[in-house]
Image 1 (cartoon, helix red, strand yellow):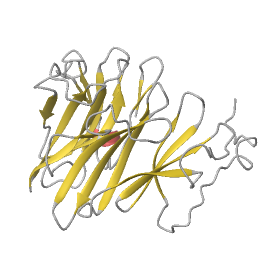
Image 2 (tube, rainbow, N blue to C red):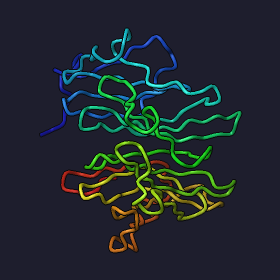
Image 3 (tube, helix red, strand yellow):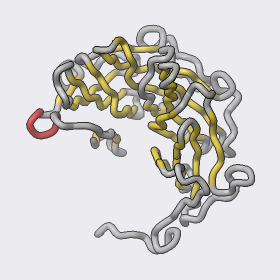
Length: 274
C-alpha cells in the first residue's frame, strides 16, 4: 500500500496546535497512547507542555484545566534558564514519563530528571519525590533518554560532563516507585566511555530487558563522530556475544562520519532500526 495522508484525521490529514505564545513552537517527542491518542511534548525556555489529540485528530479537551488543548507540565527554578526535552514514554495506564535536562548558563548547571505524570496530567506522587526523579550526577547531566521495561522499571541513559576535554556516558535503572535499582550494575548505575567526547543518541529495551544504545563518539581533534550500536544485558553488563564485544560500529565511510544525530527503534520482532 502506498503511504498517503489520511484525510479523515484532523483537517484534511493535518492537526494544528495554536497557542498565544510565539516562542511555543518546539515539539520534541510524539507518542501514541493505549487509546490511540497522540501525545506530543513541547518546550519553551524553562518549562514544557504536553498536547494530546484524539485518534481523529481533534484536541483532547479533557486534558488540563482552562487551557483545553494542553497543560503546563512543569516550570523549573529561576536558575534553570533553558531545558531540553528528549524522550517521552506512555505507561500502561496511559500516564506519561518524560526525560528532561535543565540548564542554568549563569550558574553553570545542567540537571537531569525523569518526570512521571498520571493520565490526567498530574505529577504522580507515588513516584520518586513528588513525581520527579533526579539523575544522580549533580549539575553535569547533558541528556536523559528513557525507555520503559515490561515490569514498570525505567531505563535512563545519557551523557554527562567529566572535564573540559571529556564527556562520559551513563545508564541507570529506576524502579517503578522511583528509586535506583541497586541490583543493576554498580548500585543502579553503569558508567562507560568510548572516546574523549561521548554522546548518547537513544536507548531502547526489548521484552527480555536487554538494552540497546545508539551512541556517537569523537576525540578532541575530530569534528565528527563514530556511530555505534551497543547492547547490554538486563543486569547492565555488556553483551559480549553481540557484534565486537557488545558493539556494532557502523562503517565510517558509509555511516559513521558526519553523523550528527540519530534515533533508535526496536520493531515488534526485535529487529533494530536506526
